[in-house]
Image 1 (cartoon, rainbow, N blue to C red):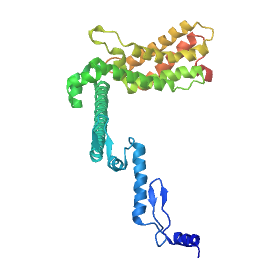
Image 2: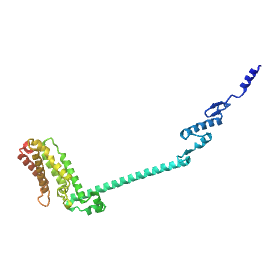
Image 3: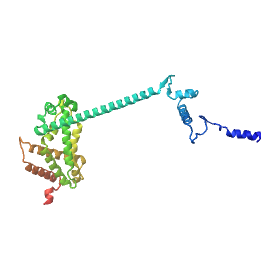
Image 4: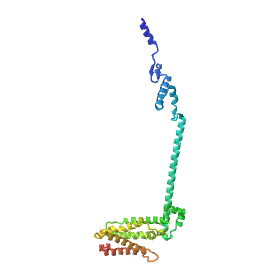
Length: 313
């Protein structure tokens, strides 16, 4: 065999050369076809170092790379231990949870206070309404209301500003209930609508006489003006007679019809109020209803409108 052939045979019998990678040299394959554990672990560590370097500052060398992987560089020049950072972050989260819980508790406490305040307000109104309905406005005393509600007089004032505020709130609810009942009267026939409004007013007055009287009898303390919103509510209730009169008197002036509707309602109020007054000129309910119908008949005839009775005969 020549020298060249001998050199080639010696090279083939030698160990294969190592392959150079970005993480270092890898030795020959494992006898069972798997890389040795040490080489595999070294490769994984090398990848972890690369990730650490990508999120941190440029590394100075392989020795520093492993060291810097467990620390965060402080901008002030010092190192922050990762374990300390972890617990600091945990404390921040716990503080946030505590703050959130505190805010939630405050909201719940405010909600409970609002609910309690709302219930007390309704209770005061219910007591005041009951006294007015049973005994009349003159029997209503702030101390009686506070005692029945289980609170102080100051609490009543805090809820409504003053005692006028309690009475005005009851009066608002009364006129709102009255208006709702009047709006429910059928409007297909304007003549029948007028009778229906009169009868509905009578029925409401008979069932809530003292509450309706309170609406008209209450005088503000210190001669203060009566609230405009309640006056407007009363005018709106009286104005419900306006639409049927417009239909029955299409050629009449609108101002004249507005005055006429107020006059009719005021007259009915006087007849019903006096008719239900037990101390003086009380009229039996059935007779009072007949008187109201006769009043409407007379008003319609005076306007040149045929009443319901005459239309049916």
